[in-house]
Length: 340
Image (cartoon, rainbow, N blue to C red; front, side, top):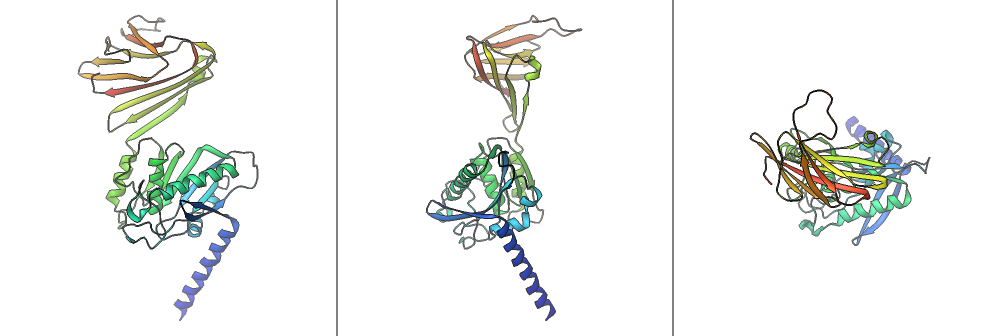
């Protein structure tokens, strides 16, 4: 009889633990697309004027928000953050529950299975709106994380809500075949080699898909000695297409002309006013200015200022604006190995 009593005692402890978790958080409710929804929310009670990071943590298929809060306990390891543990619903079919009898999450946008549509994406939007209304949310630090089906939904948010999701963390999830990641984001992905629900090969493929786009952003105002109020560059590398995209955001208190410069060992070959080909031996690249305030391209093999020390002769290309403005945005795409 001892094993049975021990089992009852463990279940009792888990029940008490779950009740305590629920008592510490706040259960918020919504009605979204005709469905009653709820989530367990933990938020700091001090320094209400401080912008807070926001974390959405999704349970696995068949799980619940109290269990997620107990097992993940992000709110205890990161008490400075607002942490939301949403509750999934039934009628979300999965490979292990094809009838959708247990609560879970949609796996793709406009999901036909279970007639889900975008109900869970809409639920996320409603939760995000409420958090922004109730708390001071740092919009640059909105994160999604989840386990298994919750990890799949975290991937879905990256694919469909990339404008608001700053980073993703998932365990035993994967990106559904119908979804595509178009915006680079940071991710922590943990996959199990002997996972039978979402096989490792599928999870590894999703991780590889997530790695296809790399990006970095830097602030270059210091290089201009205070002349600019904004000088931000973001460089994105798409491994699949072998393409580099450079986005520059510039601003000044006074109107000025702006230049986007390109340097080459050989003379560049303009294909149009916004496209030039660069070659060096067998290597080649097409540079296209996809967005700018209105520019003209010129090039010269003369230095604007003498280099310090010996330097090879170079050609200096210049996309220069034709009018003075206080702000400018340049988006240039460099297609490596391609002709214009």
